[in-house]
Each structure stands twice: as structure tokens, then as C-alpha cells.
Length: 220
Image (cartoon, rainbow, N blue to C red; front, side):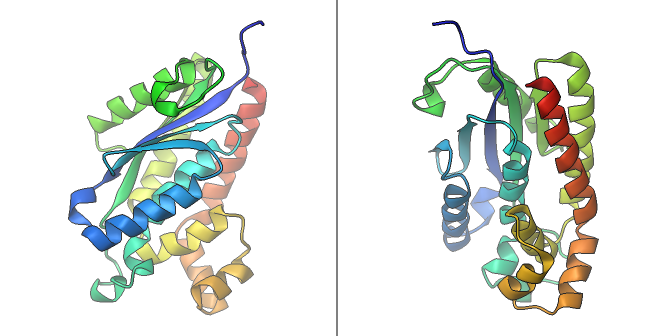
């Protein structure tokens, strides 16, 4: 059988400030991450890091951003946001690296799998762990990496200043909900949700997600 040369995606990540969350919030975040990643082959390590394999790379950036939004919105959704000022930044986040490339099939478990996507994802996480960055996107194409790095920098800047309330709304949009549906999920007025979505820079996030999907099609 010829080697598989199709494009796959691997997410390698760790939870920022996991020890400062407290057992209740840490457990809630782990459960939500497991649910978000349940469609994919995923392994959690030591409770504060994980790796997921996506057979198709199109949704890789969206799911990575959902993981970050879940962590950032944790104070709001866990009921602790009322004790924090409105302008407070999140107490937690996800440092995550997306590797796009080939893999050795079959992938039975991410922890023992091999291939370009796994190497790139691990390398990207190592790189950003030495900096203040919390998002990396790498592939095996030098020119494409220029665009992917620009996307990662832009998105990282957006998420680093996102409040818990904004992230709670962004979570639902990343899942595919409409703003009208978000009002029901958050039990907030239409105007409040609109303000949160706008302040959370959803229009820019959505545009970059579209650009990412277009680039993936060119690489595949």
C-alpha cells in the first residue's frame, strides 16, 4: 500500500495556570475539553496537557480556538465571574500548537503515533512555551507558514485580551450557533450579546477561520 500523503492535523496543548484554578474549576475545564475533543482521537496527560489527532484538518483551527475560549470563559461559566471586575482577564488559557502534515496510519493513539503533523505540532508547542505566545500553526510548506504564522499572531493577540464574558459568547459562535441562539444559551439580551461579540472581535476571528479553510484547500 502506498504511503498516505494527505493532510492531517494534530493539536498539542497544555493548560495555562492549571494549578491556580482550584479542583472544581480544573475538573470542569477538563470535562469540557474532553467533550469538545470527543469526535477526535485524543489523549490527556497529567491532567493539564493533551494531544488530539484530526483525520481532516479543516476544523483544526476552530477546535483549537474553542479550547482556548472554554478556558478563558471558565470564571463566567463556573459562577466565579461575579467576584471579578468586568475588565478582568481570564485566570486560565490554553497554550496550543497545530501541526498540519502527513501521518503514519493507522493512528491508534496520539501518544504513540508518528508523522510530520505530530512532529510539527510538538515542535510548535516547544517554541511557544519559551515565549509569551499561546498559539502556533505549522505545516511543511515554507510559504504557507508565513500566512499561518500571521494568522496565529493575530488570533493570539485577540484571545490574550478577551474577557471571560466575551469568551463565553465566542464559545457558542465557534460551535456554530447564531447570535440569536447565543442570547438563549447565555440568558442575555440581544444587545448585550452583540456588544460581547463585537468586543471579542468575532468578525476578525471568523474572517481568519475562513482564510484558514481556504489555505487548507490549497495545501490538500
